[in-house]
Image (cartoon, rainbow, N blue to C red):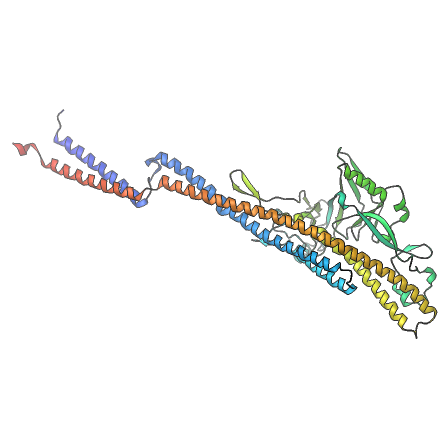
Length: 528
């Protein structure tokens, strides 16, 4: 085939352009440090880059956002639970010191006040927030665990009277919740039953007091025995309630409450001694008090696996009270107090907040209030307070009578005999109240230990979650490094290799120019 000069020039220009294109491509790679500029330059590498970047985006989401937020949540929770644990440790120590039998009334009162402060602080810890989110209130992270003054102010602003009205607070019991229960009633010489102890008027007006109607030292404190289950709240509404017994076969039974009372001595002793199951509800103390027949019925139901509960209403709330929705199913009647209008039903107080920290992997980061903040811790002190007040009241009676006995000018003869009579009764009243306080303090020491153990278990659980998050974070960090390396290897050029390629391409381009120049200088004329 005849090769013309035009053909040679065309081929030379084509080859030089190819060399220039290669050199330009290498120069672009050197400037951008990337293997390609457009996906069409290297489709396979581009597809792999998309896959790597998608993986990198997922890992970054899990590591830089989800895991980081989860770690922050668990660390704040762990710190709050550690504080609650120390408060429970201190509470147990106060109980131990208070239970010392050598303490006087004033000493027991000091210990009691210290314990009240500890428990109040304990529930205040439940309002701990992180990044404006409350840690122990489940999904309702914008609400506090306890009622605050601001809560009541908001209800005032909404023209609801500043009250929270909860209905159908559904509280379940366990077999261990059934306790032996003692309460006292005053019985006069005529056999009548009334308020506990002698009255202040009987002491002040001793000169005119008729001892025929005053209980003596034997009868003044009459101890009656029964059983009880204690609700988690006191000062509940006066309404008709029943104890519901849900049996394993799907049927439901009920134990009717005979009467709502505010004083234990209002209980009929004849009913307690009867063969029929009888239950009273003290709406002031929150005690369900029942007789042996009812105790047998409930115990048998527990042994058969039945679930026993009661639904009650409460609107007498105070600042510092724990809100019931974090412990029980209940209904907040809303701002208008009208049934069915704006009410909120809390179906499940055990709410889990899970963070996704990997493909098909999630971890619970929150701790429910009921796992840390135990309502019985406050209820124990409320019960002690009632007997503490009785003890102080009895002590004041004893002191008053002794003061009057010392005034022999005013009180002589028969008056002194009356005072001796009343003193014996007041001392028995004091001894009984003191014994009950000591008993409750001793029991509280044991229960405070149980509360500490429960809080410590919650601390262990959140510590385990924190440890898991630490391991997950380390794994995600390693995954991110690996994906970054793979992405870099897939997209980025090796500068040292590229430098060699650029130098080689440059030499080839220069050589092509030289060869083309020499060929172009030669023609047929040179040989004629």
